[in-house]
Length: 209
Image (cartoon, rainbow, N blue to C red; front, side, top):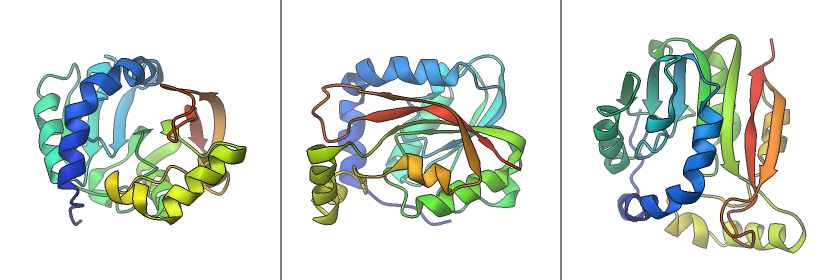
């Protein structure tokens, strides 16, 4: 599995992370409180989720394709409250060698996955029967905001400066076409509501088999 190089964005994101986590951190904690057993984390970034895993988690395999962020995550894994292994890889390409998991976690990652439909299928293939996907993602808004988000993405300006992020992704529609069935979802604003990376969806979906 090849790396995904975004060196400037990775360093900028890491520098801004302490400020961003004042808003995002409480939502990460709330989302991850229900995780247990063996967990697969997609696009772990610099390991911002790691402090919030509860003791019910036996181990985490955290996949991250960007080398700089992966190194940051590996350092944070050493201080995490649960065992975490950080590995190279992309969400669309999850080999059988990773094993099978009780649940998967995706936080602020589906915006930047090249093929989100393939990623959802790949995650489903790595989960045990009845496994759960926990997600916290910014998504497409409505009305004029949605139009502005689509314009930013189609111009390729935002994806270029933001490490491949697409602010107009429609996660609800992606999940409806996936092997998952949404069990709980809440739409929230994290940070100023006018931001083009608002609103967010927080929730869980279960593997439907």
